[in-house]
Image (tube, rainbow over all chains, first blue to last red; front, side, top):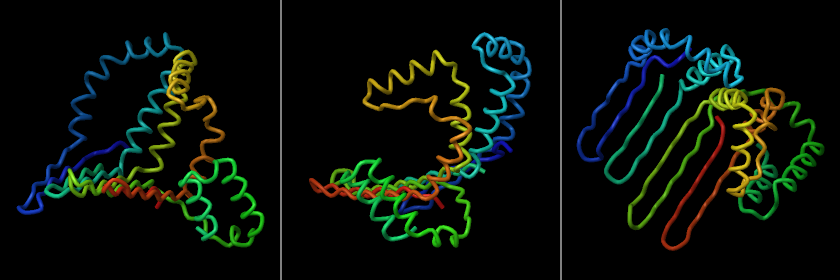
Length: 86
Length: 142
């Protein structure tokens, strides 16, 4: 299943930080319409590149789905940043 | 992971032995201790974790902690398999020019699982302490 949300947490060591939630599912809904319109062109482009379009779309969805659980944390003297993908 | 296996990986990370030598040593260890391998519970590790601790006098201490799902590696390799052969040749050539003798076509669906399974047993610890700069890198699966 593709990621439905993400969270970015930025904190300062001295004062309280903030947390920003990113609702990816809204992004997917917004992108669904242009992607549907572009599908025939993408299909032709994949065929021109000798790539199986169904396999390519499947691999892309697998890649997106595999992003769930990714976490990146960077901490230095003054700032702590945490990115989570759910 | 056994202590001897860890020592072999540390020697590899330190550059004292080559990858082929490490592979031979690990294979010899596995031959010597088949019971350990058989009794070890089959634990599927889900994430590859990369931890970097750096203490630079100019920048101060910096810690980077990354958790990447193993599934992402599988998906990435499968996506890489879709690269057209002519583009793949160009990628291989560019890697060779950078001193990385890597053949992308060598990774396919057949040996992908084997690679990921081997990664699950991987632990790399690198400690650098020179010119007042300390860097510690840990790569392992969890």
